[in-house]
Image 1: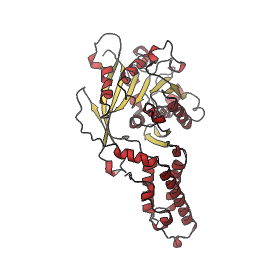
Image 2: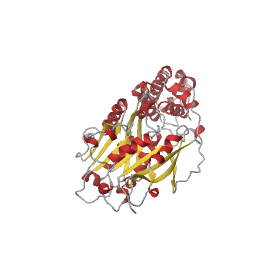
Image 3: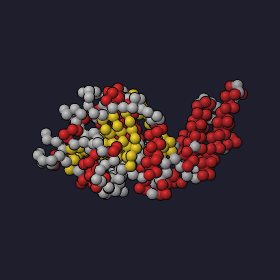
Image 4: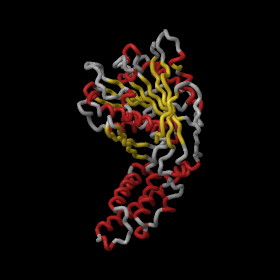
Amino acid sequence: MIITQPPSSYLPPIAKIATYTSTQLLDALASLKLLYNPEVRGSRRIRPNPTCNQGKLSIDVKWSSSDEDNDIQLIRSDAFERSYAIRWLIALVARMEDLLSIDDDDTQIESTVHPEILIQKAASLLAICAGVSAAGTVERVFSLGSDEIGRIDVCVTDIPIENQDYGSVGAQTWGGACVLAEMIVDHPEQFGLGGKDYTSGKRPLRVLELGAGTGLVGLTAAKVLLASSAWRNRGATVVATDFYPSVLENLKANIDKNFPGDLSDGTITITSHFLDWSRLPAMSSLPKLLSEPFDIVFGADIVYEAEHATWIKKCLEQLLRRPSTSAVCPSDSNSRATFHLVIPLRPTHVLEASSIETAFRWMGDIPRKGDPELVIHSKETILCEAYGSGDVKRSGDIVEYLYYRVGWSYQS
């Protein structure tokens, strides 16, 4: 559980660290980790709940007050408290190193947890508190895995919102991106990223992420593709886009961190690119990286203004590969060009969430004949724990997401 008190008020006194048990010290480290390296809210899936129709969902969802979150943020940004935590961690490491250098008979501290474990955990927190996190950033490592892909690690840096400009919220990793990244790794074939080797000689796959933010989804997709020999042989390009300069700068840094240098033989590439949804439809020509249509488009937590859904649709009309050439394997529905969108259902953004089904019609609502249009093919509800199991106080809080599959209409 996150303790909503400053570290200086609850950490074992530095001068008396030796009088505390190793279990108590481990608990103190866990509390500091929750404070200075917090888990992304709403990123632990409970279960998917397919929605088979367009009716209302009957789900009891509890939302917690943000007062406690504000208190925690104030503590996290307090320079004195961070400095105290650093001094405490240094003292703990020094004490544990002393224990390793003396005989067990002389040990004055109960050691159900080996001192080396405490040293490792304390050193990790020191890197967070005294390194980039001292400027308000957070380093995150997402370890994802499945039987088909194996394990992949994606490292991203969250940076502070710029000058309280909440339009630059992409500087943070949001729960929807965590959920979508996990889904991609669990079932890559459902996103057109499976290891099936389509007929040789086909063009490379093109993948786009809208509102990429820290790049978690695009980076995950690139690593999934890299893990597949079929896609390494055929080739793929991932383009992660955003609007804000500070977000794009951080996005590029995250890409460089995960893919230093060239990717294998260069057949799988990922890059960042500026994209203004509101202006793209009016452009006379598209930038080179966006000039060829995309087979797969991802978006997570990107609809937080009423006009966003309309802008996104107009962009997709230019960027999503049309039916005549969309299918890598026409008989496989997973190979059709598709926009995968995950959005949270926030009580403060009900209108924005409903705008998706205003901008896009359902496949079943359009005429059987006529020009293709972008439609909703399916919708699922995904429920997540708002906080990790370590936060017992809030374990009942639920975050609800909607997952849409959008693509061109086709004749049945």
